[in-house]
Image (cartoon, rainbow, N blue to C red; front, top):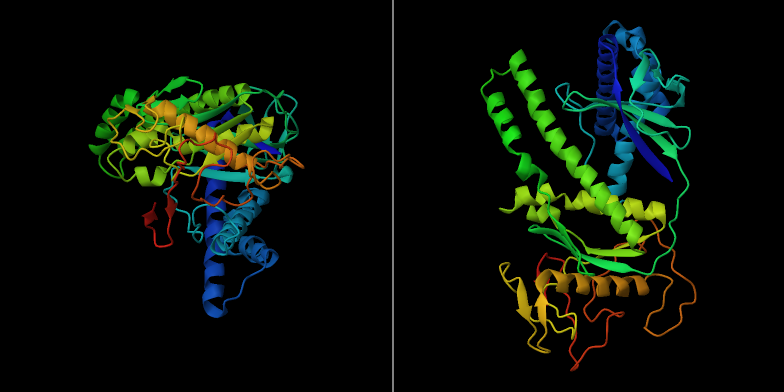
Length: 433
């Protein structure tokens, strides 16, 4: 599997000028190639081959007075920008054809000179690691790298990034072997929230750190200072960097915390189950700032990546599962409850439930049922498993699992003939019971 290792780099003033020149040349080649491809498609719906595009946008363009300055930077960086354009088009066509999972991907757009985040990629031909620990980039020189840990293998490519805060990073792509952890017996279900970040089925609670809420005074003051500066002035550019640095500190602290919590969950549990967070929907409500501050999507992505590396399983149950309405003892759906109701008593069995803890138990049962009935597993409980299903990076399902109505197959037996009713979504976007 391939991993990225990012390190801070400290270019000299001259190297910063060379990097800025490389960023600009790569952006121009990308925009020129995109314009040519759009014009060719509009003319006769044709596609220019990658080799022909590289010859016209790089080799022949260097011979013209308008693009002669392309020869001042590494040709490997220019070729990487064309490969990025091909990847963007491939992602678009895979998305519209249904081969790519996730949200719809649009057509590539032109890059702006005013973008505060810039990057350029180099393959093996464009960089090398010196014996003294310096990173040598073609036509830029030896860059000082803050090595916080050694690379596990020789990198295949490096991406130099300048973020909005003016910091420079070198991101190496290396190939590593999965390091599977010793198997453990424990499995856990997670109910994500905002007041409490997560409640685990074993009774453990994870407090919400609220990084942005705790540190928003500095970003707010920096933003107020920025709003008073004249547009286009140097003082405004300096104030913008202060705002970006304030937000970067919050983002770095949040990302580090997500890595720590995900590592602990993966280390202590063989399988982790959680609900599919509807981040895009909640981000359009009055809870938008709290939802983005919680970074549920980032936490789930980090959790899945670590599980794939260390041989664990992460199961994601449907967001339409009524986890807060279902009693995990008798599996009776008790109905909707306002958010201020944190404890409720089941009307069927009389059990007093903590809302979040009960939801984590329901998520655990539903996740186990989905994993048990995954491709390669048995259809009914009590049947011997002929062969174990092979988990992949995103779970055991190669496609999104269909949401069915009925009790999870692996859940405990129901009492009184009751059943768990999960909500499904109709093709027109309405929900039915």
